[in-house]
Amino acid sequence: MLDLEVIDDPAIAAAALDPVRAQLLAALAEPASATSLAERVAMTRQKVNYHLRTLEEHGLIRLVEERPKRGFTERVMVASAKAYALSPDVLGASAAATDTIDRLSSRYLIAVAGRLIQDVSSLARSATKADKPIATLTIESTVCLATPKDRADFSKDLADAVATVSARYHDETSRGGRWHRLVIASHPQPPTPKEAKHHD
Image (cartoon, rainbow, N blue to C red):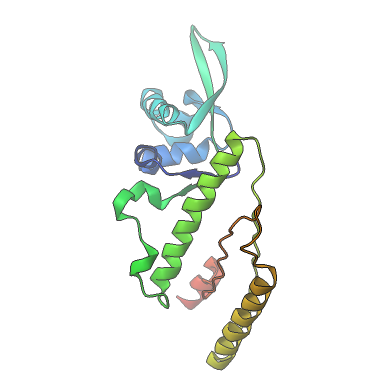
C-alpha cells in the first residue's frame, strides 16, 4: 500500500469523490470484505459490492485474498493507498495557470502548489517505472512573526538568503546538470480544531 497516491484521471477522481465510495475507501485502510463493510456502514452487501467493483475497476482498491464462505467466495479488499491527493490535471484545461494570476495573491500560491503536485507526481511515476529514486528536498517549518514589519523583514532576509545560495550553486555550463524548481511559500497557519472551537 502506498503512503500517498495522486489522482490525475478525471474518471478515477469521480469514483473516489462519490460520498459512499469515499466512505468505503476510507474504511478499507485495513483489509475487509463486502460483508464486514456492509455491517460497518449500514448498507446491504449488494450495494457495497456494487461500489467496490467501481473502486476496483479504477485501481483504488485491490484484492488481498479470496476465501470460501457459506457457498460463495468472499473477496477481501484493501485501499491502494493510505491517503489520496487530487492533481489539478483532473480539471484539464480548467486547471489554474500561474502566468495569469497576481503573484502577490493567495491564489497564486494555490496555483503554484497545484503545479508542484502535477510536476512531482509525474516525476514520481516515471521514477517508479524506471525503478530509480527521485531527488527531492522538503523543508517545513513554522515561525511566529510579531509585527507586519517583522514579516516584511523576514521575507526580505529569506529572499536574499535564497538568492545568495542559488547564485553560489547555479551552473548552466555543466553538461550533466539538471534544472530544479525551487518553491518557497509562507502563509498564516490555520487554527487547530481546538483553537477554532475556543474562538466560536
